[in-house]
Image (cartoon, rainbow over all chains, first blue to last red):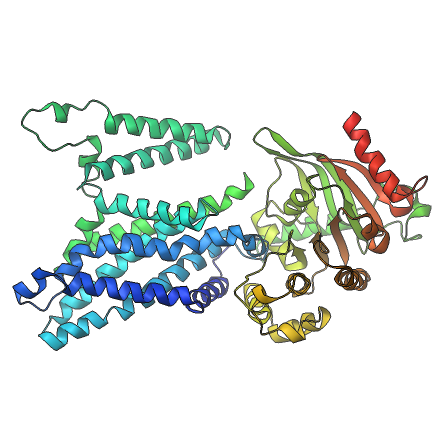
Length: 297
Length: 277
């Protein structure tokens, strides 16, 4: 059965209307533009380098988006469940995957609108000097891909709870996990624990074909992750090493968003980086569909 | 149409054509002489278990075409869970459901069913920041209705929403909100209606209006409506399915239910009997 894009578009349009028909949407927009402007220009580095580029913003963008995007996505599914409107939608002639896609495109749409307004920063650069147009385009493609992946992560977070605040915290934690993985030991540890927990729970479900005791399997997996993360570690016994590390750091070294978004900021669009973000989105949307089917358990 | 769709359609026709065996006391049946009324809603041994808690245990009943059936029971008896299973929102732990011959647990058949089924969930959920017109337009788009405006005009008139069409739903009175929910359920002119406590929280005047609407709809549609209000049964239902503590304790016509005593006395009798057991 093919995906009906009329249904996807109907959900997308409803969500866009809800985001933009609401004062909160404009508060978010203004905050985003103000924060990114401060990150780009209110920095000593920007004026001392005498270069019309967004290098300062590139450095801070992952940290800004990991809070901003979950603020968009937090209500995406949590509110539908809180007001039971999900029951209306899911008893209409629509497939779960169409709902997930419509919801995802809705948050991506709102993020894209916000990002489009921040193009004003590029205009500021043009008034100050002569920025490289190709570099600007590549930089913005990088921002968009990163934000789109965060949208998918935030959507999954929003499906875990009916409380938007909890969804925001879960989403920000998820995004922080992929931002700091590889660079910060705690983030790698957290991500490793979460991934092992999820793999154990899903593995149990696939192997046993039942959701019974699935939570226990997940906890066992997460416990194993914690042990690997915080347990005795040969690398830390090395007297010459002063930096705390753990087994997950090396594993997630290449999974960090920061690493994959960096080349866009240098004007290089690498297929591998695009594939990284696309894979992240697909995996998260699959997980979202799976979570939507959870109501049948 | 794929082969699976054809099979589904064949099953549906077969199920609908099945005779309504099990209807007791044909003489008491409100549709005397129509013994072969097809079954529109069939629940067969439905059990729903949440963790250790059994919300429904072996629930079986039938609703025949063109009847208005009250799904009666105290709060927490399992009415909403049963309705959610019939609409395909939840899946049963065991047992089978068929509505219009479609299996709501099958992804394809559920979609076919959703095209023919109108559902008003418990406490009438709505997009509160939308206006009734926006909300109805959204559901018309979601359902890909041809001539959406015509459908919207019809339900706006049916549910008397003309005055509030452009007001945000969150600013509407409870009565109007419930009517918006009804309009949404009726938008695609469904064959079957499943209404979860359609009059809860309404004042007597609003209740009278909703009941009148349901009676009118009941002339041509099959309706299953849940309620814990006994007067509702008297006012609109042809038949009663009584659920208590996740089990069906009575199923039959209104007259059968109140044969030796009033409906109220029977209500206490059926619920007390289970408590002692």
